[in-house]
Length: 367
Image 1: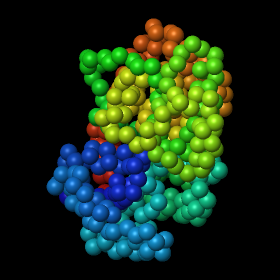
Image 2 (image 1 turned 90 degrees about the vertical axis):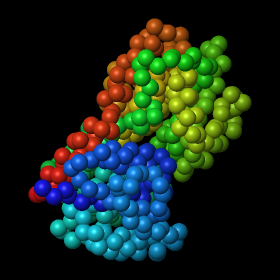
Image 3 (image 1 turned 30 degrees about the vertical axis):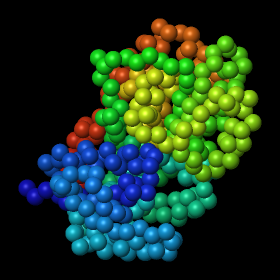
Image 4 (image 1 turned 90 degrees about the horizontal axis):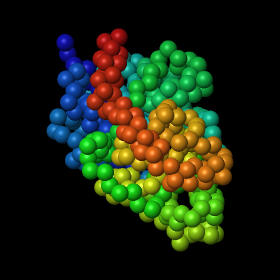
């Protein structure tokens, strides 16, 4: 039987550095061992990341909106038609566009916050999703979500997707998969958050909770925040500059994987106060590295953390402050949560993702 040819629009490898970049990169790596399908990547620029077994097509990107539109609606479809794939996968849920019906379309939905909570996004992102997303989903042959929570949101917002949408959990970057028998590192006196600085991440509540924690306890743990500056972040930076414990709050920006893994392994507590997540890679990574996680009781985060984390109301900074103190004083419970967290994180495996996803792709190609 002929292997189906699958084209992946791999733009997030070139123009993003947060969750969708990680998802796209690890999804592609998980396909490298494939014996069921052949793959070709559509990139903005050539980069030596993957093996020679995976071909690439380079379609350059441009800074100007008009040229970006031409690339998206004309240049990418033109190049795809030349190779005539059976299926095209769009990992960033914006496309693919202008393809004949014989080419099946797979769209991956990570979350629907631009539709459900537009106030957290820039105006152009809100408008693009309102204009294009419904049509993209209608044209999709298969829609893949990264959690049961995202699947429920998708089916609620767009009921016509129910019969063509499925959920497959993504995996964790193997670099963060620390074996249980690995040497346990000493916990250091700092709290950790990692992720983009933008409204959905709820970092103002984190700053407020940190102040209450310091005011109400004898602990002097620092707060380390890693990740890049995002959109609508002015309130966070204003709050930060007026913070009474500003000298103990470190903004490190983007850090290397090596540095992040060490921070995960040595933090006294990993805090993820986000209002909403489609999945929540940092939580799974932190658990895998042996961090005790304090996370919001919202969206997919309870799905990822299960009984391996401590939860709080993301609108209640007082409760978060109490949970931080609880983690630093209840060593026995923390150790139990860390062990549970390692086992929970092991459920998110890219090899298993590839097996399940490729079965769906083969089925779709033959339909």
